[in-house]
Amino acid sequence: MVALLLSAGCAAAQSDTTNNLNEVMVKENRLKLPFSKQTRNIWIIDNQQIRNLPSRSISELLSYATGVDVRQRGPGGVQADISIDGGTFDQTLVLLNGVKVSDPQTGHNMMNLPISIDDIDHIEVLRGSASRIYGLNALTGAINIITKSVTSTGVSANVFTGSSFKKNESGDLYGNYGIRATGTLALKESSHLFSVGQEAGNGYRHNTAFDNQKVYYQGKVNVGKTDKLDISGGYIHNNYGANGYYSAPGDKEAEETVKTALAAVAYQTKLTSFWTLLPRLSYRNNVDDYLYIKQTPDKFHNHHVTQVLSAELNNTFETGIGEFGLGLEGRKELINSTNLGKRSRENLGLYAEYKFDRVKNLLINAGTYVNYNSDFDWQVLPGIDAGYTFLGNWKVFVNVGTGERLPTYTDLYYKGPTNIGNEQLRPEKSRYAEGGLKYNSNHFVLNASVFKRRISNFIDWVKAIQTDPWQPNNYGQLNTTGYTLSADYNTGALTNSQVFNSMRFGLAYTHLDPKVKTVIPLAVFSRYAIETLKNQLTATANADFLKVMSFTLTARYCERISYKDYTIVDARASYKLKNSSIYADASNIFNVNYIQAGAVPMPGVWATLGYKFIL
Image 1: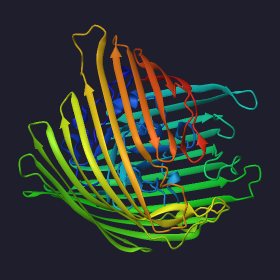
Image 2: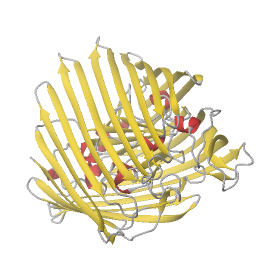
Image 3: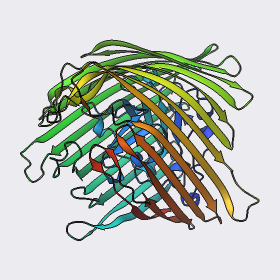
Image 4: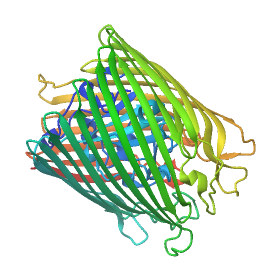
């Protein structure tokens, strides 16, 4: 899927390299292709868009991507659930530079990432079942966040503050602030990036204050003429008031602290002229501490510690009949929880891919992922996609895929006053088919596609009567038909204009029609199946003018199956100085009352003033 890109505002104050969208390399685990050659439904949020959108978190950035359903429970992305094309938040796989960061405890924690938007080069949103590429849990798609590559030595910072200009119970204005700093070091044979961040605020309503700190490092070292060593690691401490987040209205005084540490090391070596080997080790530690009533911490206090250790062995072979990708993946998941118990499970995956491009204008990618899980045995997950280019810039594409999602530990074992797990759950499985048409040129990009997805053993939290606790069940079969239309126009540099330097306009619409075939006739109430988006319309416009000014205006229309429709309008204006820029954001300009998740009302109008500089 094509990105709704905005042109580069306040670019003079950034060291980022602005790439043409068609040149962005989509960094899948083994076989890589530039965006212009992709035969999948992929949405790219590139560095231009990241700089210009009125967002201060990754979750807010993703809310502008069509087909992505962001259900935030707090300001600034302190807690958010991410789903794609009508799926649930546990059915989307999240990766950081190709490393899987999803949490086996619960999908509620998967966006607790140690990076800020200032660290990101671009984001790849792969729509559709993607298990042949990424393995388990990419049931409805995958989101791969790619950090910046260091090209020069320097220091940059971003300082901002904001407020709704409303007052809390104590008479103080609701507000927030953020400080982010990044240092880069570019040497002859290595490069290094180190970033830190502090963001905090007193919320926007009762018990929604938050305070988080982030630190992240990545290093790249050239070893010899062809080999490369990549090292990365980060940590985030995220504390927030969780009023109504999970068990409204009883959790009015709830508080949650989520601490996540990530580390990865990869070594790329070219063994022969046609064989490239990439082994990788990664580790994720997550501590989730939840107080149902923070004033009485001994009452319903849940403390979860999860650890995930992964090892990968990726291979690519370039041959005369096409490119092959082969690999092996092993993962160990452990949890020690006051609520879920002490448990572990192992996973082994074998995967193979083949890219055929030896016929002019035709590209075919086919592969399969064979998976063994210690709790759920064997599963084979094949897939294929193909595209044919005609008349220069037009492409017709089709893809067929499968997926599987394992129940989380919360699904299986949770015990609480309003939620009870189910140890009898079986994995969800999906089948997906999509076809579409693309037009791709330097100034104009168009995409139209239609898909159909069937999820069997669909897991939803349900109950028969309102006073019952929620319990997950293999609710039935979820069939979703959808289509997407999008267009993006970029004027490029307007050398003949004395006022406007460049302009870009984008429009995207996604329609979803989910239908549930239930196998539990007594389950009257459903938590997630009826909360999916039905219609989503995103419009963006950006203009750079007078060589120092930039203005962005966005509008997002959302209609859910079980909730009223709403339209959110945001804006950003920026002014460029020599080595810095000043920007002002206005979020939810018309002060719309709306809900994205559960019973949590989102903030109204919010104004932010920020200053960026680079040395």
